[in-house]
Amino acid sequence: METQQGFTVWLTGMSGAGKSALAAYLAKRLPLLGRKVELLDMSELGGIVPEAPDTSKEVRDRNVRLLGWTAKLLTRNGVIPVVASVSPNRELRDEQRRQIGRFFEVFVDCPFDVLLSRDEEGIYRRALAGELQGVVGVQTPYEPPPAAEAAVDMGRGDVKAVAVEVFERMTNHGYLSRQERDLLINGSGPAGVVQAGSTKGGKSKARPKAKQAPTAKGAAEPKEAAAPKAGAAKAGAAKAGAAKAGAAKAGAAKAGAAKAGAAKA
Image 1 (cartoon, helix red, strand yellow):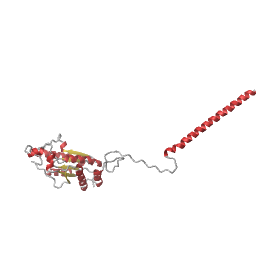
Image 2 (tube, helix red, strand yellow):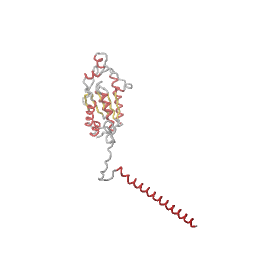
Image 3 (cartoon, rainbow, N blue to C red):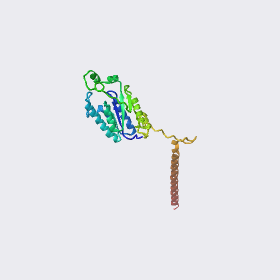
Image 4 (spheres, one colour):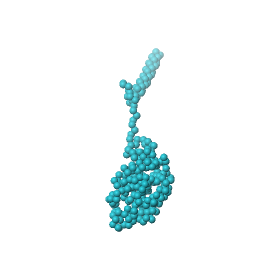
């Protein structure tokens, strides 16, 4: 199983389906494997490759090919690009699959009534009213993939639960090992690396203190082990004091003898 090669994760679905939220979560979890991951979200590339809701088919196709070319370069260099793009044309998505090779397609589905409820800009309502033309899902058809590697329903908006489905499918298709899958679902660090003192949530956990060997009854506690040294120091001081006292007595005796001699003289 070649799990260390790059591969492209391509999320496709209608606007508002939840591609960006799911792509961002996948791009956040996959680096836990120690892999390089890049997020290519069409909604965040507006300043480079602008794409309005009523963009023409020619502009949409050009943008999809640009994303595909970028993903191909990243994939062949061992990176995992996570692409989030409406990319409504099935034939064009298949073209990217052929060029990239290691291609994991995720169809992000969502009921249309949920799409309408999430449409804060009123794009679908304006399209239905005829104010906008060429909107995907209204005037321009969206062509769902017939055999995507993963098909998920983001209508309920549970990103984590949907991500678990995607990781399971990645494992089934050989892009992840079971160990890597378990790490992405439950873990919090690089695969095969034990993080010292780490717990879920990133909080540090203190290492348990080493257990001390039980002491025999009546034996001195560890803190009292220094007592004999203190006693020895006191004993040494006493001996030194005795030696000084002896020297003083000897000096006194010599002085007495000298006085006696002087008296006789």
